[in-house]
Image 1 (tube, rainbow, N blue to C red):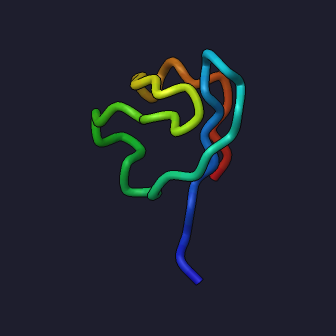
Image 2 (image 1 turned 90 degrees about the horizontal axis):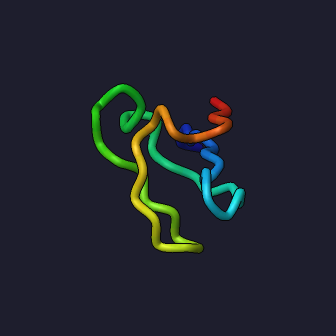
Length: 48
């Protein structure tokens, strides 16, 4: 089983899964629910 990281969207507050290699990579996360792109620092909760 692969690793995953749960990210909470700062706008809609829904949780989605990203690849752990995205952490610290300066790539913006994309929320599949509200179609928002946001930087890692804007997420209210990231669970590894």
